[in-house]
Amino acid sequence: MFEIKHLKTMAALADTGNLRKAADKLFSSQSALSHQIKDLESRLSSPLFIRNSSPIEFTETGKVLLALATDILPKIEQTKQQLKAPSKQKQSLRLAVACHACFQWLLPVINNFSPSNTNNITDDSAYNNSYNIEFIDENFPRITTQSSTKMSSSISHQQENDQSVDILFTDERHNDDTFVYHEIGQFEVVAVSSKQQQLNPQHSYLNAQDFQQLTLLTYPLPITELDIFKLFLTPAKVTPAKVKQVNNSHIMLQMVAANMGVATLPDWLVSSQAQQSLLQGYRLGEHGVFKTLYARYQVNNSQVTIIEQLIPQAMQAFAQLYANNE
Image (tube, rainbow, N blue to C red):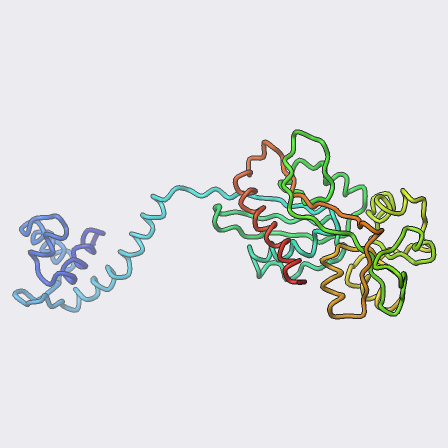
């Protein structure tokens, strides 16, 4: 009965108010446009507008057709633009965490991508968590899935060598030319106790021997994988009086405040808690125990452009931890 060209004619007549200007707008001659209108009126068995009216006054039939043109033509144009636009390939980026110092500060970075999807992530294990981020394009990433599942030590090693992991946040660096390591920042591993428990009144630090009389709260990992043992106690051949494993760092700090033991945690986490609770931080040894946090990815990773856009945000978020504690 009618075609898209007829709808364009109705819209042009409404915009210009007369036949001659409508023909110019449609890059047509006035006679050709007049012939098209008469043909359409013949199909509809009704005039579309009152002749010799200025500006054009549409009949009821003309108004119905004009309403359709007003509704349909913008949708057609929008569809044409979408079809002309280059197709945007969905890209998946998998982040993995292989250090307990990473989990809590990484959440705000993920939250920047998709605040509505991170509400159900909790510090269940504070160790070895992974997230999948889907990129519609490089400027609009969004998280599609995430996991916060407690993992065993064996899975931790498997994850470090998992070829499907695009970025691994780790505080261990290995000599391997197949990976690029970006330094995110440095942190200090410190001991924390309740303020009522004066561990070393003469110094602001603890010696390895001080732990011989203490209950040490740790994450549920073998002692060979815990920094406090690898970097401090084992070299001094010291064993704590007792070791208790705790999954959640928040519960661990509550247990410390309740005088149930001493924990060793990243300084930024201890500082934020010490300012608002009954906790006391201590350096490990006179010179302290320091670690560097890295973002590691494969040299030939196909997502390197996106990865190198995300890493500066991670660096900024990590630096903000210390700015918040000043």
